[in-house]
Length: 123
Image 1 (cartoon, helix red, strand yellow):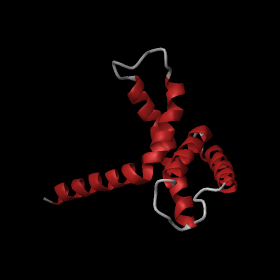
Image 2 (cartoon, one colour):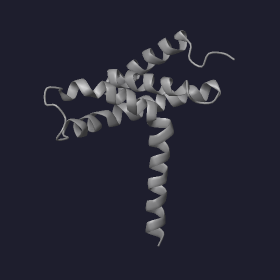
Image 3 (cartoon, helix red, strand yellow):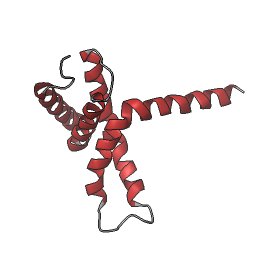
């Protein structure tokens, strides 16, 4: 079986994601961290076609770049969080975690939430 993520594919994905971040105004570092989390999740996933793996990494990076600033503010606002760790520092690990969880947890969770809201509205 071939390796799910080759170094060349990783470099092309990271470079493309960084350029996409600059064009769209999203933080390129958060996009790369999210893509790294998405690629990390591929190691635990079943074998998939190349296009699905690439789209999964791109979607993971987008989810991470959009959600990690808000999630980092939420984490740093907790009462037990040490005040010496700034918000800017925690954004990157949060983006990596969100990228890792995007396709397996965040996406299905959003679908379940929207399905419940539609069912409640239909009643």
